[in-house]
Image 1 (cartoon, rainbow, N blue to C red):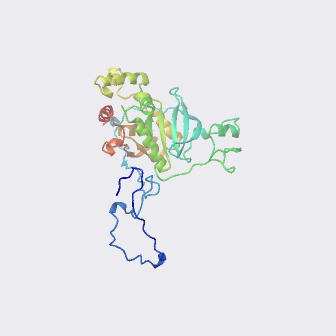
Image 2 (spheres, rainbow, N blue to C red):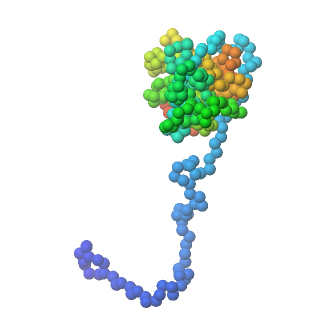
Image 3 (cartoon, one colour):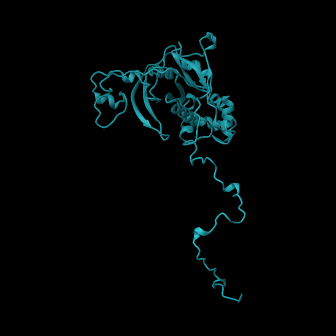
Length: 332
């Protein structure tokens, strides 16, 4: 081949096209064919891009442990309030969540403190007795504004009742899931890796959404009841080498200053009294008796453990920090 400039086309002779019709070719007569490599073969089933949407999934209920505190002796029971505080639900509103589920947020007032405690309710059949009670002089619009309605609100609705029928409760044969959760600003809002409070709140909501029912009683008792300011002081002591309990004691606070009498009263208001009982989401067996109340107004039938995600996944998911490991060891 003569020397040509680099932009010149290579010198080759084009082949002559046959005039024979394509159908006359015997396409079966060819050179030996080889199977394509396995990497190019499509699987018999191609999973979707998002797991869990079209692939078969199994939703298992959370594992629980049956409990019975009826045979505990008096000296085995923690000291509880002799009388439960009075609680009143003053407003309720529907909250669509980022996960696609819905819940009803109930705000409570009480005669024990001036804090606004909450009940996060999954399922429209769980209703507050105090909210549904008739208030003298109120209109149907007043009732709907404070959330004392059945079903869903929509533009133009004029009655808090459904088809003119009075409100009634729906009975279920499965004890509902209940979580008593104490406020934790650092773990729920400030992304703290010192505790797993935010993770537990999310997991409780996920389980209740999956079960189509349940209640998270959200108590405003930050820092195991010592308040946010004292809790931050305890964090500084933890950085000096103390654990959660030691830090609280050095600040002249109890190891755990939380009280659950308000939670018991709120659960009673939501209709959870009686022998049907509840399934309590907690890692603390001592919380069972505290939630049941001084006269076992609430009956805990089962305890459902909340295992940290990092433990369940071998550290592949969940909260990762040196602080969280020390915190969980202290709790255990």
